[in-house]
Image 1 (cartoon, rainbow, N blue to C red):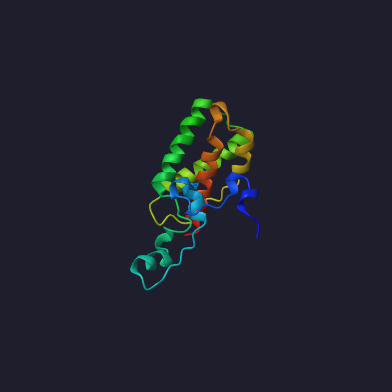
Image 2: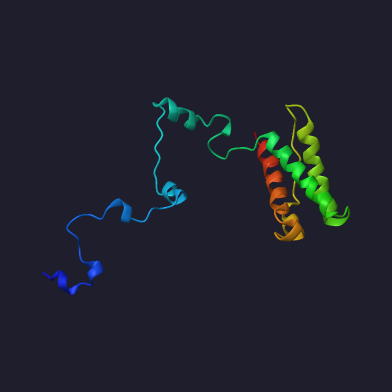
Length: 151
């Protein structure tokens, strides 16, 4: 058997386990990723999650009010930046306006518009300066509309 005197001092086993405060603590995301969650239909709290009522637990959908707020923010930025009304910008703007009209309809709204120009927004509106976040807002709006269309 090898003695512990041959090991560096930081590798010598201690007689007592290390205290919890000396252990590195994972951030909340890491802690969540390492957990296994088992749900049982026998538990009323677990049943609601399993049923996924209104898709509220898995892949939650944005509320129409959230999408309206996103539209408002996009419109304010679009105007402040003085963006053009021709070419690809016009195509993106047309889809944004289709989303606005769809959200303004009373429920049930019918089929949502199919928005396909979000990738172009990422190219036209870099994530810097005055266009910081604009492409992400447009992508969020279009993804939210697409998700609402499927419900």
